[in-house]
Image (cartoon, rainbow, N blue to C red; front, top):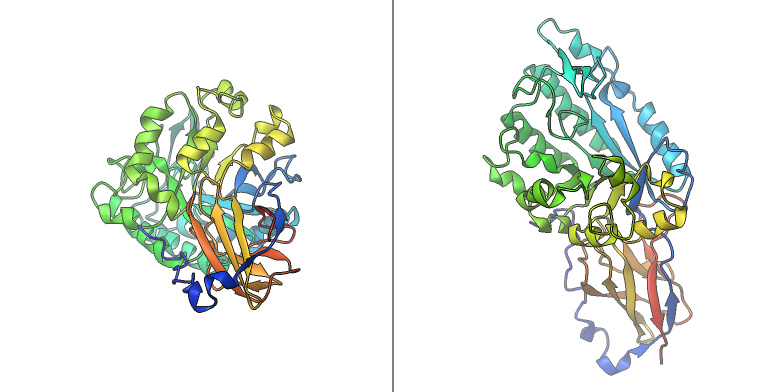
Length: 418
C-alpha cells in the first residue's frame, strides 16, 4: 500500500556527487529545538471546549450535520463550515471534522429535509442507549446519491484548505460504523455492503490531499464489505479508535487494527479517542502507567498515533502534561547534518517521531525549498535534501503550505560545524 499523494522520492539525493565531490562539502553549525506540539499532531479538544485557546494542542474536533450545509430545498450553503474553520484557525489550530446523521437521543436525523419529504423515504425511531433515536432510510436511492454528491462538493471546496487537517467518515451511531444498540439492518437502517464499497471508492477519488479515516469498528465482517472485497483494503484511508487504551484493548481493538494492517499508518494517520468505558479510563489516560498498564506514550508509539481526542483531560491534567503527551504523537524531525559546497546546501533529516507527516513539507534555506518533500517519511527514516544556495549565515526552516497563521514545523538540531 503506497499513498497516491505521497511524494515520490526521485533520487533527489540527486546523485549528490553530481553537484559536488564528497570532500567539497563542509559542515555548518545549527541549533534548533522542538519545544511545542507540531501541526497536525497531538491531543485534540472539541472546538467548544473552554480550554481550546492554548498552545498545548494543535487540533480541534467537531461533529457537523449534513443538514447544516444543505437546506430543505437541497441548496448548499457552506457558511457553517466556514465559520467553524475560521474560529479554529483563529486560535492557531486546525480542524478534524466528522459529518454524522444519527446520534443516540436525537429524534431527528441530519438527513436534509429535501430527502425526508420524499413520499417513499421512511425513517425509523427506536431505542438506542436507552433513548429514542431516529435512524436513516438507507434503502432510498436519493440518500445514497446525496452522500456521494456531498463529499464530492466538500472535497472540491476543502481538499487543499489549510484550516482542515483530517476528515473522519462513517455510518451508524456517531458515524462510527456500527449500530450496536438499536435497529441494525443492512440496506435499511445501515447502508448495504455494496453501497459502502461504492462510498469508500468514491472518497478515494475525491480526496487527493486531505487524509480521511474510518473507525476500526469497520473491521466487522457482518456489517461492512472489507472481508468480501479485500481490494478495498488497498485504499489509503486512516483509522480512528474511539476506545483507545480501554481494559480489553488488546483483544477486540487490536484485532481490528490488525485486520486493517498495522502498516496503514505509513499512508494515512492513526488516531482515536481516550476510552470512555469508565471514569477510570479518562482519569488515568495520561497517568505514568496509563489506565490499564501501558502509558499513553508507549501506546502512541506502538500504534503510530498522530492525534488523540482528549476532550476531558483538562479536568485531570495540567497544560504541561497535555503538551508533553501531544509531543509524543506524530512526526518529530531532527537535522543530523547541514553541509554546503558554497553553491548548494545539503540537509540530512531523520524522523524521530512515531508517525510520518501526511502533507508536503520542505526543508528550506533562505526560504528556498528543496525539490522533494518530507511527506511520508517513516519513523527512523533518514533523507537527504539539496537546496540551491549557501546556508552559511542563512536560516534553515521547514516550509509547508498546509499551515494556518501561527503554526510552525520545528526540528531538532545540535550541530557544531567545522
